[in-house]
Image (cartoon, rainbow, N blue to C red; front, top):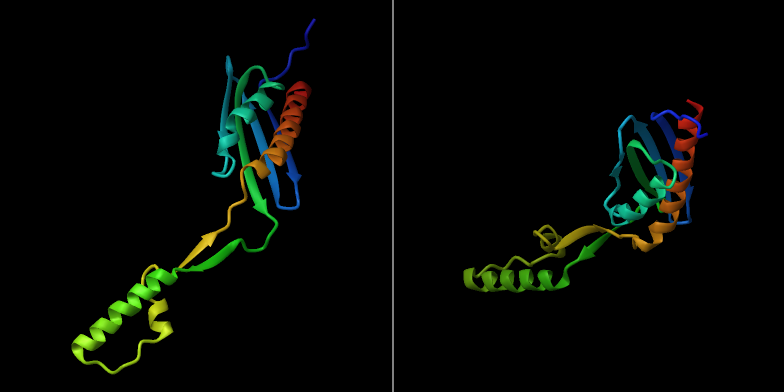
Length: 153
C-alpha cells in the first residue's frame, strides 16, 4: 500500500565548485499531472531537459516551480576590450579632417577612447559544460528535499 503524500512542498539545495555556487529552490503545488516550470539563468538554460529528468525522478505529480541562481566566485568577471582596428580607423579619419580643415590640434588617446565602440566591457563566460555537474547535484538534492517535504506534510 503506497503512502499518501501532499502535493505541496518546498526544497532547496546549493552546490559549489571552485568556479561557481548554484542554488536551486523548488516549490510544488497541486496539479493533476507533472508540470515543471524551470527558471534558469541563461548559462543554464541548455540543461533544462536534464533538470526536468532529475526532478521527475522524485516527483511524479504536481506543478513544480524551480528557480536556479548562479554566483560566480571570482569577484569581477568583466574585462575591457580595446578595438584597435576601430581606433585606427577613427585616427585616420580625424587626421584626414585635420588636413582638410588645416587644423593643428593633436589627436589624443583620451579623445579616441571616448568615441563609440572604441572600448567595450565584456563579461567572460563560464562554459556551460562546467556548470552541468553542480547544477545536477543541486537539482538532485533539492528534489529529494522537496519529496521529503511533501511526504512529511
